[in-house]
Amino acid sequence: MSIRAIRGAIQLDVDERSHLIKSTAELLTKMLHDNKVDESKLISILFTASPDITSEFPALAARELGLGDVPLMCFVEMDVAGALPRVIRVLINVESDTPRSQIQHVYLRGATALRLDLAQ
Image 1: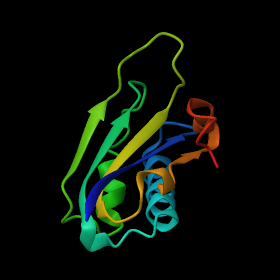
Image 2: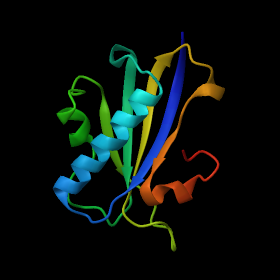
Image 3: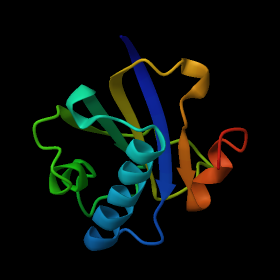
Image 4: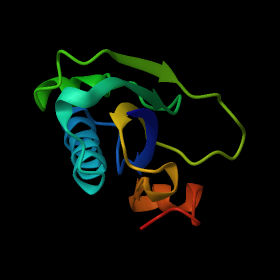
């Protein structure tokens, strides 16, 4: 069994608490589903938010999805001039036999612009 990292991001329409939780849950659910992740194999989930997001911690969405026993941590992204606004990024660390080349990274809404080569 190997450790794999699954990347994802979503751009929020507005920095509003309920929208942030719903959008982050949407992203997490798709990341887990697309990679057929057995939740018992989750190691940790890291979240970043662009500096313009202050309404809530994205990790709350994971707790509300029942992932409260998984180590979760939130960070603020670097404040780079011209960066895409209102973006939540996620890095899921998981035990998996899936080859790295077959991991499905998920970029939703405006965040597809971050990685056109990986966006679905």
